[in-house]
Length: 212
Image 1: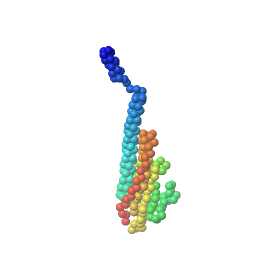
Image 2: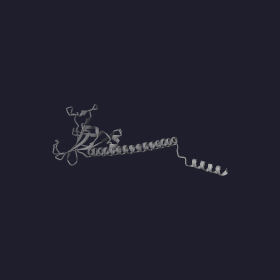
Image 3: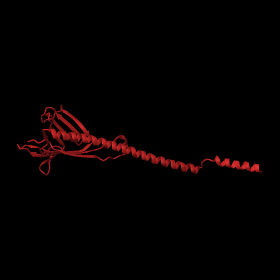
Image 4: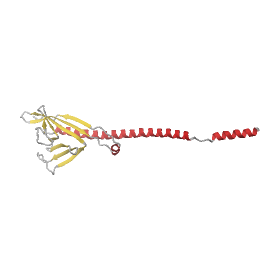
């Protein structure tokens, strides 16, 4: 009799020891695991998106800053600048603002210290800044002269020439200003995911050396 009870108790313990997960327990475990994995993947995806957006914005800011600094250097060191007169027939028109001393234009022209005629122009149709260089030093750009885009994604660019008369009664540039808006160049992953990075606006101003 005691032997029978001992055998029954041993079998009962072995039965409980070998029992696996029930279906409900398995489903609960799978649900918890899937939620943890989903939360992890969402956090990793957000981290990658933030990194890609920051890298893209930083690259655009660096390129914009470089172009702006180059144009400011040209304004400071050049010997002549334009446009200093309005031209309503141009397309888009070159305007004389209400203060009577400031010209608003889509391009900037100047002569650098080497005598080169340089023109920086915004082309709205292609959203590009173009650089033209005339080595002959005349006022006419020819197809054989250097023409190249220097920056893309420029949705808006305006040049302001605050002018004055020098001692000889000639109009010269008192202060030149640049106002640009540049769209950040999204990488492929950001474009596919519908990321919408804000445009970058850069405004800068400088004075050329005095021309008396």
